[in-house]
Length: 277
Picture 1 (cartoon, rainbow, N blue to C red):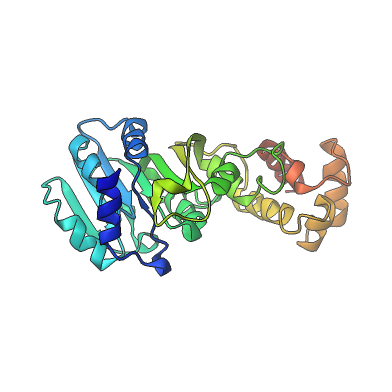
Picture 2: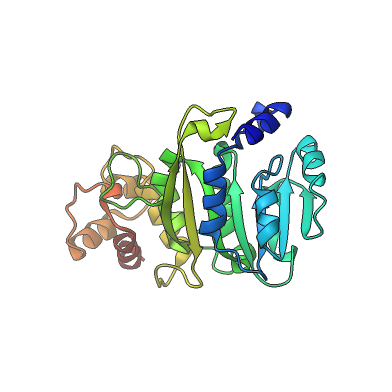
C-alpha cells in the first residue's frame, strides 16, 4: 500500500482531469482477476494515469493499449518499457476504437467520474446505433465508477429514488451489467468525496429488444424520463406525441394513466414504443 501511495504522492495530480489514482493493491488484483485475461487478449485501458493497473495488465495480456490524455502521466507510463504496451496520447471520446488493433478488445477503465455517461455512450453507442464500430470491437468492459453511478447502471424500474433512468437503459440495452464489488474512497489518492464500485459490462451482440424502429424507441424513452415529477402521459404529450395514440397505448398495455416513466421496465418501454408507432 505504501508503495502505491508514495508513488501517487510523488506525482502532481490534476483536479481538472478528475485524477484519482487507485492505490489499493487488493482492488488492483481484483480488477486483474475479474477481467479474466487470456494470454492472447488485447486490453484497452482508458485513463491509466501513472500505470498502477497497467503494470499488472501487461503481465497477463498479449497487448495493452493505454489511452491517456495527460502528458505528464504518459512520461510515467513510458518508464514501464514493456514491449506489449502501446501508449496513445489522446482523448478517449475522440478515439475511434475500430482501428486500434486486429481482433477484439477487452476494456479496463478507471475514468474521471464527470465523463462516465459520455464514455459509456462512446463505447457502446446509443440505443439506436445498431452498427456502432466501437461496440463491435469490444467483448467486455470493466469500469470503475462512482458508487451512485454503478447503482444507476444496474438499476431496474423497481430501484429506489432516481437510480433508474436513461443511463440504465443505454447500458443494459447493449450490455449485461453487474456490480462486482464496492471500492472505498480511501482506495484512491487523492481520496474522492464518494465511494466507488467496480462494474462489469458484458457486451451484447444483439440489442436487448427486437424493435421495428430504434430511433423512435429512443425518443419514447427520452420523453419518458424528461420530467420525472410528471406522469408518463404528460411527458409524452410535452414531447409532441399524439394524445389519442398515447391514450390508446396506455389502455392496450394495461397501464394506469397516472403512471410515471420510471415505473416502466425496459421491455414495457419497448412495447409502448411499438404500439405508439
